[in-house]
Length: 319
Length: 288
Image 1 (tube, rainbow over the protein chains, first blue to last red):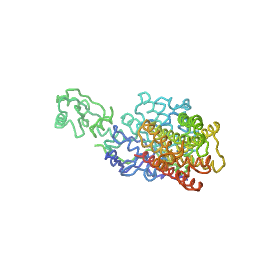
Image 2 (cartoon, chains in turn yellow, blue):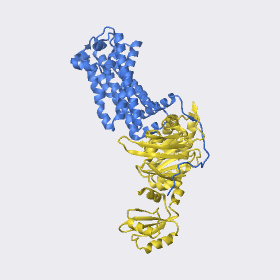
Image 3 (tube, each protein chain N blue to C red):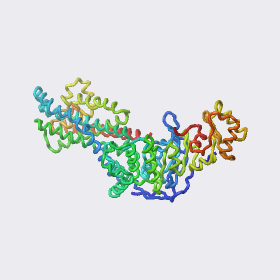
């Protein structure tokens, strides 16, 4: 029997999703968002923010304690088999049969996802070629490099042509060159308009480069959700960053009193960050320098998602 | 202040393709079984190691003891012990099969299986199918080795059927225990440490090397609640002991067919209980 997905449904529809683990740890708190078909959506936050728990609930390996979530119209709690049938996931840690060949791993995945054998064989060949794995497909995965194994895992997830693909911290632990290659590869997924991608990451460049929209997650809650450009635009075109000796909060109060800083200025340790709205960056730096409070240096630059995250949470996003 | 816009833009045209959801469990079960076979074939220790001790017992120790002991209640001792070693082989093999469950978990491979659109209990049944198949092959090897060494068995169809049923149900029960333990312990070392207590210790009390009537009465009473004792009595009734003396030691009745049915029911009860517990433990451990 085949079940039709609901054509009007968003690919991912999350409403009030919560997870409290045994012992009372609230990992996810009342999270809501929707993801359109074909969209690349990022969950951005540091380790422990609740991103992987959210993906766990969406992939039915973590049981929600509140709220609901639907994948292509299928409720992950009430109809988990249907939800799993329309999705695939690339896990943060390795999740392959290392003693089997790369091709065998893909074949097993295809069969478990119900891909008919002739179609599976063709799709697997295409993916192995497309991901540069054709020559090593007959080798045991335990002989693969970290990058090759990661590419295999992404290829495997695509064998069933999922409507929703979850990438949980796909580049963690990879060296910079392999990470860059993988980002290219994931960016290529955007061309597959039929695939909705939900990506979790704590790397800003990944979110900025890959995602149509980003949800910033902090302590289990979504504290901001918009396009990367709109999130940055909330801090203006430029900001001034200065290091101060002594009390940064007192320096901020002085800047506000002088009309050089607004409510969106913030401090982290000895660093004071001031979004610039009405002045040019050069004018703002000059005006602040005249106050003689920036003893450790002063500079102007465009805002990043890290600044957005810092302002919203008071924590740095990525090391 | 950044606005939170939780509704997705319709950036790209929605696509909705029918997806296969409800399908036969046969195909995914066959896939899981083939996967486990492929993995087992790459770790020959799982197949060879469990065979070593029982074969040694059957072809070296039992014949040596037979020269001293002669016969047990008119049954050639070597043949008596050959069947007894099946009660060692099956539990050891099933416990070794449980290591694969831990390897799946530690290597992360289990996570992709859990994300598959299949009932998660099928993962347990796929493992069980392989444990049963490998047990069957090993029992055939053991019986073959015993025959070559001079053991004698009655091979009428009903007897072979009883033997096979008892061995298969014992394997199901033991694999259920193995799967449960594998999902409860954190480390492979911890699991391996528990194997002798579960797979070997009961063997000494279950009438494997001598009738349970030779045990102190309290130990004989304990032996009667072990599934292995019932399985061995049925297996011997099927291939060796048409009078059902081992069954009589357990039940004290005079009708061997009835006693065999009762003992088979006991082993089946253990198999059903332990397998259902293992499925429950696995599915619970799979979801946080």
